[in-house]
Image (tube, rainbow over all chains, first blue to last red; front, side, top):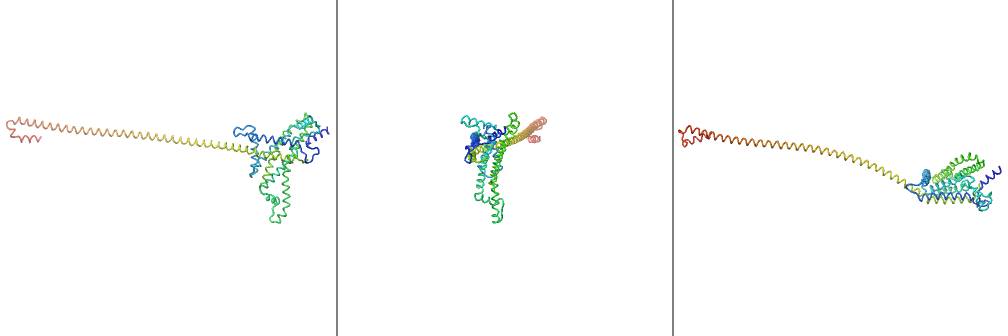
Length: 270
Length: 156
C-alpha cells in the first residue's frame, strides 16, 4: 500500500511533458492547454456579454459579469490614481483567469487524469502509467511565474512610462536612501541599487510562489484525502473543498490586488 | 520546480488575453455601465425637477385661488356699495322731485288763492257798489259820481 500510495501521489504530481527528457524547451501540455482553454472561456464569455450588453433589463449573466467588472473597477479606482487604459482590463483578466485556473482544484482529483488515461489507452494505445495530467494550472510554477513575470514587465513598463527611462534608472540608484552631496550619492548608489533589485524581484517571486503554494498544497491535500477509504473521504474532503472555495477566490483576489498595488507604486514618484 | 517553455506560453497567452480584454471586454462594458448610471441619475434629476414643478404649480394654484377669492369679495363689496349708492340716488331724486311737486302745487294754490281773492274782491266790490247803488239810487247819479265809485272800487 505504501509504495502504491507513493506511486499514486507521484503520478498525480507529474506533468504531461511534451518531451520525456524535460529541459527548458519542453512544454507542460496539461497546464498550458487547460489554462489556454480557461483563458478563452473567460474571454469568450466576457466578450459575448460585452457584445450583447443591454442598457435596460440586463440578463443574469450580464449582471454577474457586471458585478465582477464593477468590483475590479472599484478596486482599481481606489488604489491606482494615475490614468491608464491597461490596468483595469489587466486586473480583470488576472482575477477571472486565476480564479478559473484555481477552480480546477474543485474537480475530483481523479476525474481528468483517469479520463486522460482512458483516452490515451483507448485511442493512442499509450501505457496508462505513463499518461499524466495535472489539471490545476496554477499549481504549476511555470504558470504562476508566467503571470508574475508578465506583471514584472508591466511594473517596469509603467515605471518607465511614468518617469522616463532616465528617471527610472536614476531612481534605481538614488532611492530609497538620499544623500545631499555627489560623493554621498555615489557611495549610496550600490546599496540603493541592491535594495531596489531586491524590491523589484521580490514582487514577482512572492506573487507567484504565494499562488503556487496555496494551490499546490490544496491539490496535495485532495490527493491525500483521495487515498483514504472511500467511506470516510467525505469527512475530510467536504470541509477541505468548502474551505478551498474561499482559498481559490481569495488567491485570485490577492493576485489581482497586489498587481494593482505594485503598478500604482511603479507610477508613483519617490 | 522545473522551468520550461510553458512559462513563455503562459506569458504570451496572458498578454493576448489582456489585449483582448482591453479591446473587446472592458470598454464596451464600462461605457454601457456609465451610460446606465448617467441615465439613472438623469431620471432621478428629472423626477426631482418634476416634483419641484408640481410644488410650484400647486403654490401658483393656491395663490390664484386666493386672488380670485379676494377679487370676488372686492366685487361683491363694490356691488353692494354701488347698490346703496343707487338707492341713495333714487331716494334723493325722489325727494327733490317730491319737493318740486310740492312747491309747484303750493305756487298753484297761491295763484288760485290770489285769483279767488281777486274774484272775491271784484264780486265784493260789485256787491258793495250794487248795494250802494241800491241805497243811493236816487241821490247818486252814476254819471255824476263815477269818480267816487271808481275810487271806492279801487280801495277794495
